[in-house]
Image 1: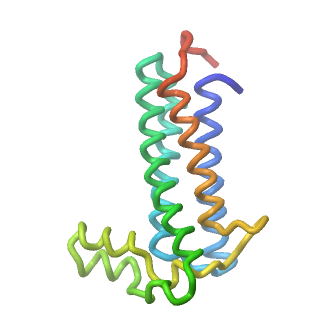
Image 2: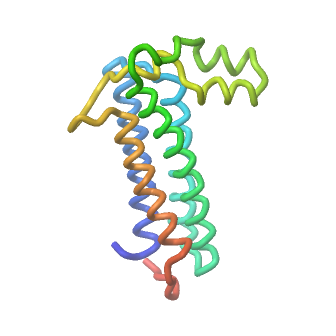
Length: 167
């Protein structure tokens, strides 16, 4: 699957899978997402939309670079949020921020710039590790996924492009 369309379709399906897994953890396993988890989900959704639009559009050289940049941008922001979350999870207990209000309360009661700042600082519930696989938490696995998405975006942004492939 070396075609642009195939890679971007796979990227979309990977993002969709991540959101479905997040929904499973929230609604079946009853693991409530913290504000940083919610922001990561938003960035997965945005990257997934760019992947889907790119796969449907299947552009030529310049368009591929644009979609590559958009995927890289969304995944890069998601990676930064995930990295912050992993960092908070690995803080010593005495340095973990105190628990704060929920995301809905923050968004309803504070200006957007202050709300974003408050959410990105994280809170005590962001430090909880509720699930691990191979010793990596959910935010750590999400960071791995965002890094892979960044690599796909960079390959499209700086890679050599042949004529479009038609499926």
